[in-house]
Image (cartoon, rainbow, N blue to C red; front, side, top):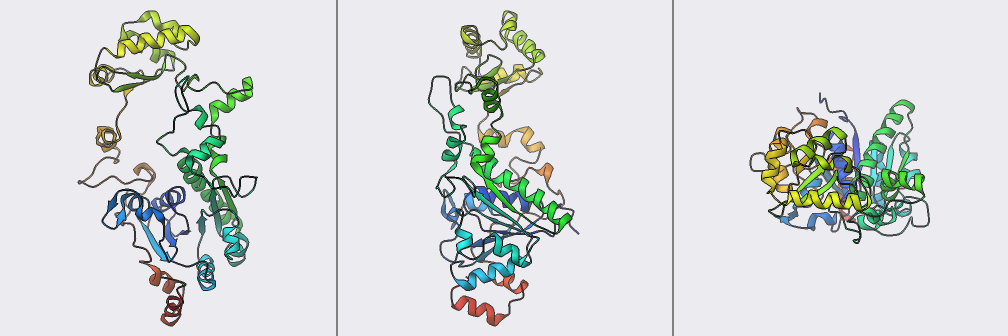
Length: 389
């Protein structure tokens, strides 16, 4: 019997692209059976997004491994009926359509709850099921823009900078959905009643914008972009360029770390300027920057490796994957294959079966329908009317 924490949990995944598929990937990594429900046409657009690996994109392959695929036309009454049948034997349904779409298709929360009162029904949207923006389209950049987070990204005096990490999609959409689903599953196990988990990516990002929110509470406004404690506004916490065009990350927030750093740089006179702002802070940052420009990243790394003061090289993604730390944690390159995205090994079952590749669209339709009690004639009829593929 599997020791994975979600072994025996069945998830119906109606999501596409990034936030929802990452959320259900995490659930699969925890042992859940995830059935990816795609339409009978093009399916998930992620199948053809970005560099291709044969007939499927690397992006899709990465996010949809260890899932099964079922193709349903939810606009067809028989397709919607099939989904309701599947909901009777499922524990979780995750969808990412705009508010109201699932209800119009006949598979909204109330209809699904009537079929299975224990089901956890998670809806992932940009702005949530309520509010004036509820039906507005958007992407990560729009959600972090509305949450005030994009405003905070960038250097002092410069424009907002678009982060390469999809903050709203991954923190707001994927991880928040997983937390909500896991909590609701526990509640369902105890009470016998599921619930509707309303995940708004903008809400989640705004709620986690800790330092700007604290600044607003304390001073009535957030600190200007690039001038906060953790955004480059003080000498002890920032990124400094090296002689070879690389960078070092300095996070010497604690006094003991700052003291060690100043000693390593040969500048004990900078000790009082650890958290300096204004002209003193700017001068200290300029002088530290000038020192770091005197050596290459490798030389600085060799100097700081034996020291305990929160100074590290800024690695490229390929360097991070090839690092000794990543390999030791099971995150690096293994056997010439690309590393798995998803939950890190420390959170998953080390005895779990090897990962299965992402399924072809509809690869498991017949098997899933048979498991749900559909006979050959009924499946043939559903195929004939194009309700399934």
